[in-house]
Length: 262
Image 1: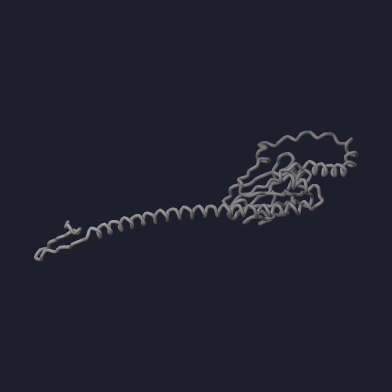
Image 2: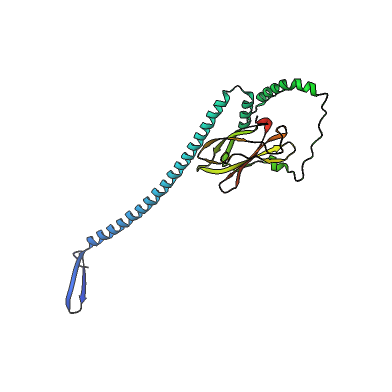
């Protein structure tokens, strides 16, 4: 290095005269600093891009959570609107059924309905009390399993509310409110089974599309069918509703006693 602060670079090539390049030390330092600065900028850019991507994922996750909560809120609002309509009725039986579905103590409504039924049946009971003796207990059929009749299956994918049914000589009438608890649409089908007082199960022949569902959030289901052959209306204990998804897997199953659904 010369005393003037320059660096001499000399190179040779065959059959050519020697060449010399003189560089100032300041330029070399400036180039070195510039290279380091570019490396720092590149590292900062990579870090900023990674941080931006992470925050974007957090925002998208928060957005999905908000959309899910909004969907659940809209579903609850629809249920509350239906509950409001039912509360406006003066029928104590329907009110007792509604409170039972909500898990609220409905003893007052049940007592009111029981008193009304007792008042209507009191004359007939007075005439038949002397004639009728207590009926012997009916022996359960072979293979009877209470879990198959009263067991409950609920995978948390759908909700059944306000189940109501009626069985008489004219046939069977049933209905319920079906709600989708999943963020995506639900499709599938169902089966209605009549349960007799001795534990026998009778499949109910419903219409082709009455228990078929393809819902985004909410659907009201109504069923009308004839009584199964060999089943008397007075022997109907209740109805068992079985719902399955598109693959045939049971996602909901519950038995509703007729005394609580009429």
